[in-house]
Amino acid sequence: MIKDRGTKKWTAMMLPEHVSLIRKFNEESKKSPRPQLDEWDLDIIQEYIQIAKQRNVDIEIKTWNDGAFIFNIGKFTWVDLNRRKVEMENAFKSFVIRLDEIVDVTILE
Image (cartoon, rainbow, N blue to C red):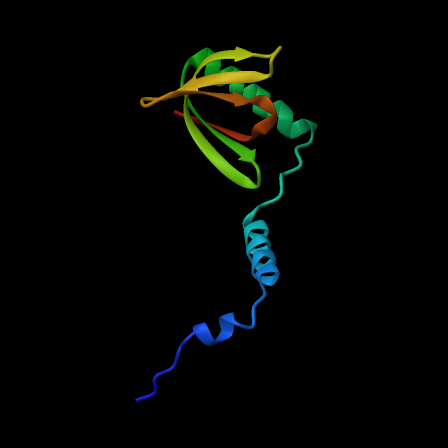
């Protein structure tokens, strides 16, 4: 039966700088780029926000933050265009979302 050290024999060949660069590369490769929204997309997002606020229905908002997409579901409690923020609440919590982070909006009826 062969008794091998497995991956331990290769760790001596890796410099700490090399290991940190590999980890950094792996973290950056998992990030997705921010989608570029044109004027049409922004108009559609604004229209859906207005409809959801008027009808008081649940809405799913897709936001982009630091290379990751975050999905939030809830109802609007207030929209502040001066500070460019919206507040939403669902059954568990209330949270504030900046309008600049919103990528996509879906009305759930």
